[in-house]
Image 1 (tube, helix red, strand yellow):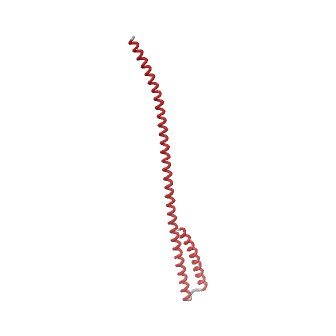
Image 2: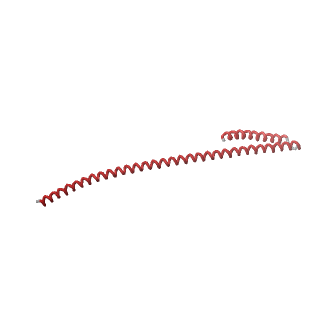
Length: 148
């Protein structure tokens, strides 16, 4: 009887502990699944944050590139303005030189008496035309210098 009682208690004990382990395993698997879900949520959250940081960095880089292009454009505009100013100055000097040459030609022709009145009129018209051109170029030059 002792042996049967002992086997019966052992049998009941194994069955009881066996069922207890199964419920623990079931609760453990639910717990593990919940932990995995939490971990996946955390990973997803970290991935979203990392993507936000990447997007933010790309946006900052684009902004910097845009600012750099704007600065380069301003430099090019300034260089173009400087070259235009120098071209206008050269044009004015060139026209003044032409006027001096025409005036000296006119003076030589008058002194020698070899210039016809019609030729004298043509030369005077050229001189007046060049003087008007110089006046316009000087106005443009002052406007360009104000922009600078």
